[in-house]
Image 1 (cartoon, rainbow, N blue to C red):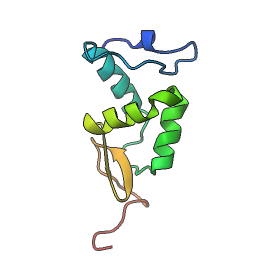
Image 2 (cartoon, rainbow, N blue to C red; image 1 turned 180 degrees about the horizontal axis):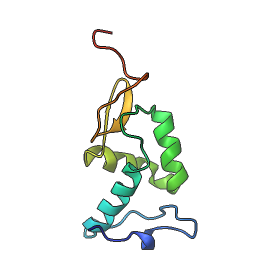
Image 3 (cartoon, rainbow, N blue to C red; image 1 turned 90 degrees about the horizontal axis):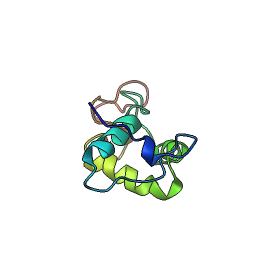
Length: 99
């Protein structure tokens, strides 16, 4: 079970502080929470990801959180955009093979 990350948020629940490297469980809790904000199978543009992160975290943390989500294999990206690493992109926004 993941630790709570309440101590890293403001009164509105926005993430304001990134835990130190000694607080791995807190980091994982934050990354798991953020991953849950992304729909499975949907490809997001960089702008959509940025907006989503800014809605749930302090602007100064946006780059750190994106890096952590990608490096931790919570999100994946290619030339089409970004998506949850635990699901394959599907639907209308997924290019057909050979395109």
